[in-house]
Image (cartoon, rainbow, N blue to C red; front, side):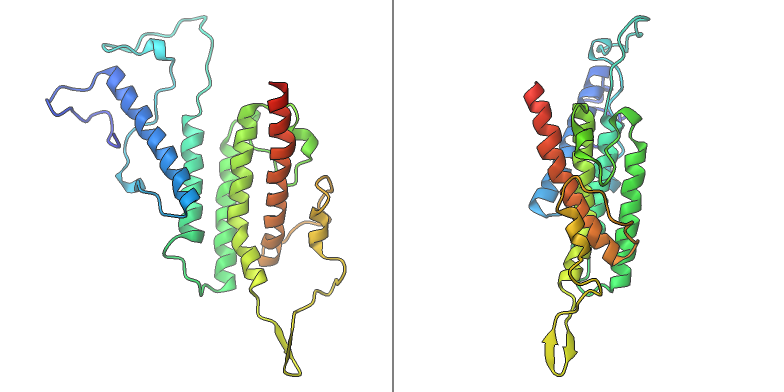
Amino acid sequence: MHRNSTVRRQDGVPLNYVEIEERRRMFWGIYYLDTFLSFILGRPPTISESDIDVEIPSLIADDRITVDAILPEEIEAETEEYFYEPLRTMCEQLRRIFHDLYGLGVSNKRLPTDLSNVIGGAGGDLAGWRASISAQHRPFRSGEDPASFTGATSEQLHFSLIYYFCQCLVHRPALVEAMQRPVTDVGHVDVPQRSPRRGKSPMKQYINPRAPLVSPLNEDLEGYTGRSAVAARDLLNLIRTGFVATSQSS
């Protein structure tokens, strides 16, 4: 099913239109499932991107697909929305994040500058994916006021959930790196490094879920550490405010 629609059945008969569409939908359903399960289990995806050349499912209504032909669209037919392409590109983001930041080939001895560059690249790719989503379904921005989640469509909430989750995954290695930094040696006594703004930790700005960011975050490991906290706060706010409000209204 991972091959394109030109493949023939074992008996040599070409696939009909219904079979082609069924194969496409079946494969991409398995592809999405494989992507998410690989993240849940912390294992590489089973399906290799280089093996895939099957097309995205057709963006047409089911009743137009017959064994012999694709029926023409009615002039006054209601338009339907299809999310095959955004879902495919979303899976690409998850797979790229896993490969670059959590994959088996990732070295535990990677230099902080290298880690910062990888995080910056992954964050840029994720921002590009967000911008590619249609405006009415585009994920909310980082640091969004939770009041904005109320009344949002279920599609926008789900894409925002994925976006915030990916933000957590992208910036988490910076937080881990910050927590594992070596302590300084003062008089042969190990003491933790102190921030010059002792008592005014930037993390305090994330405690209040509605508080705006105190200052812009830099494009470095320190800034990415802060972004990991912002992403976690955004994710929790979205679940608490957006999805709860949607479930209550339905």
